[in-house]
Length: 408
Image (cartoon, rainbow, N blue to C red; front, side, top):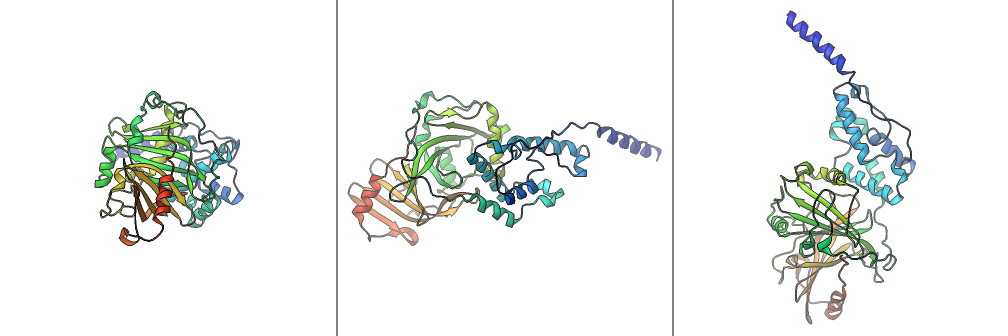
């Protein structure tokens, strides 16, 4: 009994001593808060500011060591990723971009952190509040007309001479020959994206072997600014960047098994100031842990929603993707594929991307059109049966006139 009492006394003393080991959490007035309406600021203040601001706002149980140490670490990490007390100094477009990311994290259940909500239930974002945030962001605004931006700005890079990223990931000049995994219409920032995969990634996607993706899988995410043409179709305009993801579970163990890189502009300048840019990548991809940290839902293989039937006379998914466009009136998106002799235009109904608020991806296929020389064939409707109605010559002329999207 005496030994137990001694242990209790020692434990109480040790606990009391530990309370002295309390490194500070910096606190200061907001330098430049996010520029947003009051109702948006109220939601952010309630659900986000405890960690993502320069305020020090802890509950009494957060102050108890060793819990305090964990809370402090989470707050300092959160501030580095997103700080609503300073983000107001950034351009309005950059502020909205970070808010889009925050809304996507909330929608996925990644933010506020589930463990945080267990002890701070008042911080939960209600469905009504999430709807308010989404309505404020309003991603689907018209793209600027073609020619309003400079699609040819910048010096085209020699792909073999592009420098490695700051984390050492080398640029892969073979990305332009990879096949298309999917496309994305990003209403949150007015861009289109091709997501390409190397042969290892495409084989994995076709077989459904993506949990996890096999080592050697490589993705290239190519982004263009959107432009609206005279015909009302929204097409890729100015080239923005290419991002790479490389799967090597051992080599990139510290970054979720993936190597990340981003090269911006036609001169393909490495992104960031140093290797710490990878923290942005891993933080953004963390909610996709159940999908091996990958946001993309492939149109090939196990994604039956956007896949094409085997009954078609050709397999366009095995060809090179040339360009894409969106018809906002019909809520469809199309991708042009080509081999040496045939062009194929695949059109899908658009659907909301379940992984990213403000994005749309291919849904159910609506039609596939093939042009080979003077021969035009169209497949549409349920099961994509051959359809011989319509003006074949005009559609063939339209497809052959589609210009490739600009690449470095």
